[in-house]
Image 1 (cartoon, rainbow, N blue to C red):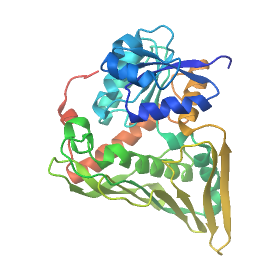
Image 2 (tube, one colour; image 1 turned 30 degrees about the vertical axis):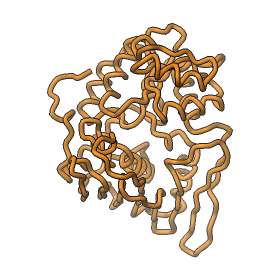
Image 3 (cartoon, helix red, strand yellow; image 1 turned 120 degrees about the vertical axis):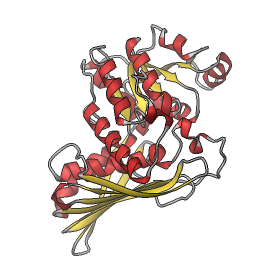
Image 4 (cartoon, rainbow, N blue to C red; image 1 turned 135 degrees about the vertical axis):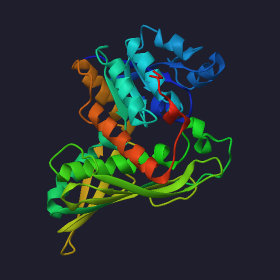
Length: 344
């Protein structure tokens, strides 16, 4: 492709700031504008990024003819609404995970954006980093895949005012970070079964909760075809090792920091065969992982495709369905789960 797609940011928080900084390493993307809830917050953001136009509202930014794509970095419950509004405004969309609050909401979003002529992608960082596919390519060396373990967890102090603990903001560990281990387990199980991803045959789980009702740490147990079992764990009040492990009949693979691997440079996983011999699975990229996401969307849009191969709509639907099952197993419901209308 020639030229660069110009990005607008929906939201001016910390993750939007990280995305904006990462675009400096992109090949096919550049920052154009930011829209926030107020001109003041947008202008404060734009001062740190020369050439970035500040808009007094998200609606104003979506009307900017120079913006070709948007990155949605607002709280979880607004992802569906802004994805649809951006697509209807003719903007390609990279939406932070979770794409929606539940599978029903995601299905309504895809129905609403189908035929708009834009590309819509959920932003799961590891799906766009080459180490993930390097690990997938090495799976046959493990023999038959038996167990997948993945964890993403951090510690923050309880405060009912924080979005982490507010059900109305999609608070809790499962939607915030548990979605990554779930997505990883589905990708690896799918690869082992000769597919891009796999739907679990069953999901059970355990969790502890804050007084607000949000899950503060949780474990999801999954069963896939061919006897593959997986454990996805997450938390917002306890720090675990952020990693993934894949065990087969002939060895195992250890992947450190699969969801916090941001900068350009070399990333490495470790393959250990049953006899004890170890091999480094290393890849090098010249772009920050956010830039890899942005460029993947830019190239998909240039090809005139609605979906990106790294994270298709069916994949997003499958992940949200599995997350819904995990939440159902522990009795966690959000206000958004009670919606009966389209909400988009």
